[in-house]
Length: 182
Image (cartoon, rainbow, N blue to C red):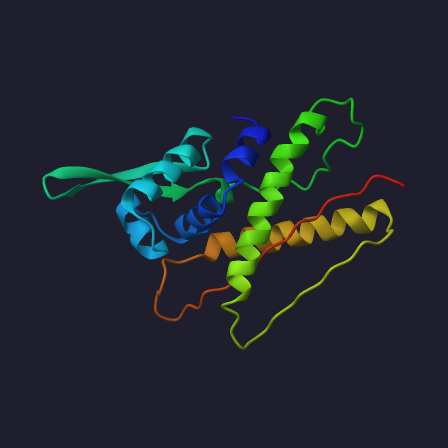
């Protein structure tokens, strides 16, 4: 599947929540639905959409009341972080096409909705919020992208099932991208 297919699949707040949930534990649609306050049918619908683009996969089948339930796991967070820059030339392969802009806008709106939901649950403890639109050299930019990517990979690798003793729920939202020159 392409990056655009993944972008389309994640352009929904429920799917973003499912990906976060399934990073720490494999769950069935019913289990994920209970955790997120959704019906099993709603969770199942969104899990199938994520499975189609390869963002979650079935990692086990469990017997429940005479039937079988699929347990899903978010797999893409286990991919090694690739710090190589995206193409800057709009005509180069893989560059964002104008028709991709609506998909990207929907994804950003889903991120905004999710950030609003999470920010209402802020707890006391270490926090960092930052916003910047700056001019920096390419080396500095690559270092920042690499460090944030590594931090994200660390969080995903160490994620545990909800309410595991000794853990706390945390949130990380980052959107790093180069801007076109004015």
